[in-house]
Image (cartoon, rainbow over all chains, first blue to last red; front, side, top):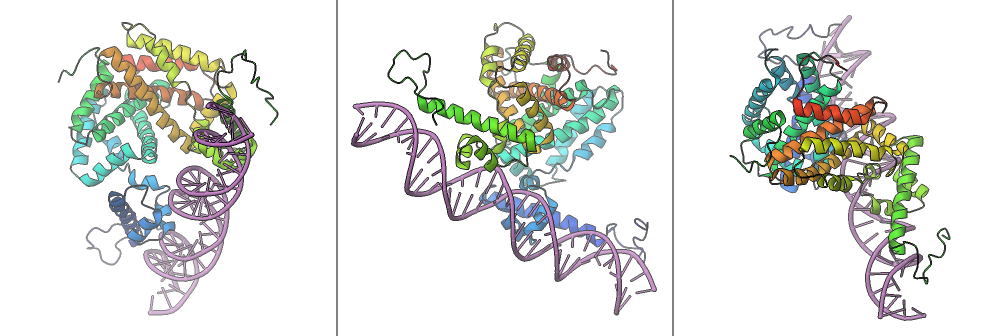
Length: 219
Length: 219
DNA sequence: CATGTTTTTGAGAGCTACTCTCATTTCATG
DNA sequence: CATGAAATGAGAGTAGCTCTCAAAAACATG
């Protein structure tokens, strides 16, 4: 009953710890596990890193690691900003062409991840490498891709006035997400050098206009 | 052991056993493991079925099971007819529009799988269910999807005169394969009732012409 | 501050997928 | 039939993951 109330009862001038100690600790533990994992995986590789090592480095018990992440792959495959993308997409004017919204979305998404707002560039790079090298991680990535696809379905359905479960909607979204996934994989496979935003643009071009036949590298 | 009896070793006019006894046995073992797995999974579910049970039912040792299939998921996720599709696609005239070739390909592929030529309909149905229900299987399916995508890349590259590693080619193919995958998943989720060939058609329509905005079920 | 309640954690047992090694059996061939 | 190669079985070992239960930490009270 008194769930939300009570906060800041005695000292009304507390900085910003809106969350209780419990919540804050959970977040910290989560981060600690991630950090430890990233470090260990960088040092010794994914397979060579065991849950036990991760637990020890993060100063928690193995049980706790599994309480926070259902599988080992989940520790590295995050997908935090799905909801952010969703909101971003929804905020676009409803009469804007979908393709245009998507282009803008891609651009801001890339900018954000490059800004290191949600994860460091090293972490992103590591994730990219793992996606290419470790089958289990790649597989898990595919699963999370499907979640993103569903999110997309909801938004696209609203825009087009169709049902989210509509075959056309689902197929459209999964085609899109699959293609973008491949683009990021292409980027990862090429040493993460090229401009990923440009890759996204070209991807959307292909999806919109098809593959122009026999067009040998027009760039 | 006396099942196959004398294999007509001395008579040089043996019908067609071009393969040695070893090869034939390997094929048989492979099939036996698959059959046993399908049966047990149907009876008790995927997770409840252990490798040990499969081994016992197939009358081999657990070691042998792992020798034939790297993972448990691989036993059910087959993907035998990737090369067949490839040949089929290659056999199409080179100047035929890609979309047309793909439509024909889809049609024959569906016909073939429905004919029970490569696997029984029950097996196909089971695979569909597992793909929807069991995360590990779905994940593995995604991996095999990626292999199909690569095959597609090679063919599409030839057709369009581009390189197989070309970003546009890869993105196009993975978008396509991802969308078709989603279509088959849609089919599986809906009790495997609808006409999967029609779903494929609609999928290709969407990819070619985009999502027609606000078009409420025009069928 | 002492209390009782709830949540989180750690410890440990247990299951199973999967790997590796080595001895044994089964097929192929001169 | 003898010799070499390939397939199998048996067994030990690793690690991811689950479950249970009791201790500890955070919260809500008087």
